[in-house]
Length: 223
Ligand code: FES
Image 1 (cartoon, rainbow, N blue to C red):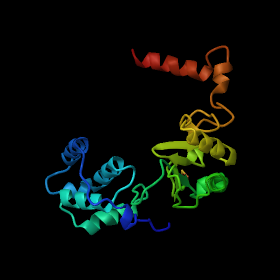
Image 2 (spheres, rainbow, N blue to C red; image 1 turned 60 degrees about the vertical axis):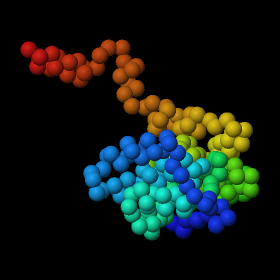
Image 3 (cartoon, rainbow, N blue to C red; image 1 turned 30 degrees about the vertical axis):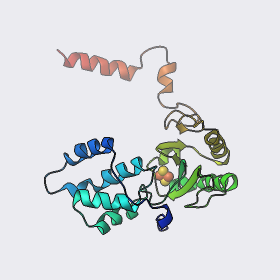
Image 4 (cartoon, rainbow, N blue to C red; image 1 turned 90 degrees about the vertical axis):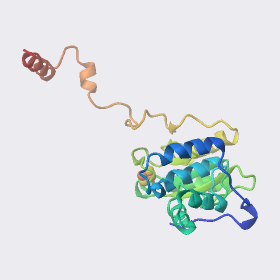
């Protein structure tokens, strides 16, 4: 995986202050950990800082987290640079995270990436000049069953190919994100050909013999 960009000095705010809403959430998060183990809250606090600050974490927020959790700054930065879900530089309004790990690659993530390049001119870590879109290539998003996957902000779009990626990008440009899930209309991870399991049961006129036998056995067990 390529190294993570950190915002240039000119983009770094001079300070970072938690909002009152974030402070309430911090209190809830810290209460989950035993006394002396508050550094375990570094992951949720990084996430909170990112959500508060336009989907990226400035170095001033790293300092604020280190101070709050009594950790060395470098330890917070180590965590923030390790996980792809933390952004240390500005990202687009529509932050695209494209999975190119083996299952998504086998199912055509190259076409998804080619479409993003064609329509937005983006390579990995790129951001459009108008700040509307940015792209990050990521490892498995845990939704391989509907590969390839393109995550947009917090949402997953599935079954991506060149055409569905183009449709999605056009909709985002209009500010009309489609319904999340499969872009080919299948229900959750159901077969693309529709339901195939137990169809014979739905079509049978009567109750199958094996099911009737189970019902009888269950009824006998209740005696
Ligand atoms: S490999 Fe892409 S979601 Fe798992």
